[in-house]
Image 1 (cartoon, helix red, strand yellow):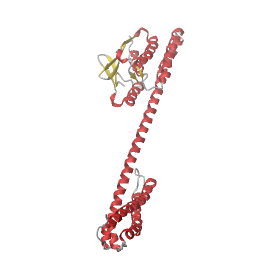
Image 2 (cartoon, helix red, strand yellow):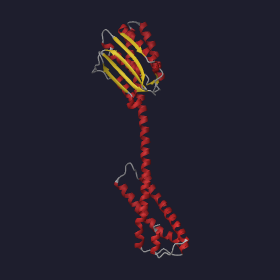
Image 3 (cartoon, one colour):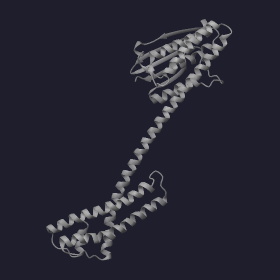
Image 4 (spheres, helix red, strand yellow):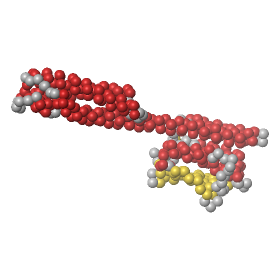
Length: 331
């Protein structure tokens, strides 16, 4: 113990049972006093020292507080240690000021180590708190972004469908009525699934069939639609309306620009723990200056939010056909 030297300064005697008792008591009292005083520093750190945003003045205040607690520590320590010294050793601890000062670095070193441990634990707690808050913020942001994207789907689809119906109202009321029936079925699907982040591919295909029927009324015999569906993919989970948006994009930017019409082919394939969805349409890949590409941006963003780097979306032109491909992990 450090006070062995202090006792020796005062002319301590031989080792004895009483000396052992004294040293044990001394250690307990020194630790207890340091522990109590450390709460002053902990209170300051907890309420006035922001680890994530502290200034030089905060550091100076902390140093001043440590020095102040040391003054209190050494002012109380010696009278307190004199009690067990009298009881166990029948001596008084009589040290000069210089002798007391020589022990200050020893106690200060222990105090600084204790303070370092406390600050390290505090820093770890602060970092973990920041991580938890960051994860919560990212989760809330992701949920908000997904809800925003879902909100973009219905108006985008409604805009195109209602335009088609408006054009048919005066030409053929029966055809317009049939289109409204198909549209209502499609919107019912959209409303019932809008709260979900994923649905089965089989459910999505039913919605796509309704959408294609609506589109066939507009395109008449200019639209040829085929499907090649891997049966293993029917129960796989996908983001709602993502296939519909691919088909819609192929009609709006592909078939509608070809006077004689063309073909749209939807195919799915399950391989290597991945689901591949591919929509191919006749035409060339071209970017219209007036197009916002809202549907394609929506698809990319939703895949990124839901699957991160594990999902991909590509749009290519291969032999006078535009091929849109989505690859996503099977979950």
